[in-house]
Length: 186
Image: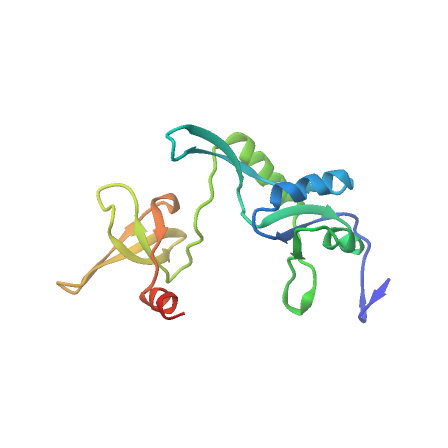
């Protein structure tokens, strides 16, 4: 089949990420199930304490705002017409971006075997704070060095820096001064 001057192969169902309205992931999973659209909503358990002191265990989306659907490209309208769907994730040029089956299978298998929880995305060059250990509370810049994740900590008083290899789980993002100034002025 020719589409927009390109040959589109009928490859069968593929996995796509669907961006949802806030806190609509579980509702959409039910809608997809009712309409026989295969979907995957990775969940994790979180223990919370309410104001009255009671404790509860919640199942929350691992990727807030996203759910994965297994459809053929031409079935996208069936997904987009559901309440709570914002869009299917696309690349540049508006082409739907599919996820490899192996990635979704690995995610499913990994969640079954390990306790997971979401973690803020930290990119190279971003400021981060170390959460645990002897260096807890120190801030620095995330760098990669030979495949490992490091944080460069700077002691401004003596104008010296050190690089420390840390685990992703030990870091949390730090709001930049620009972010704080923007939020205050906005």
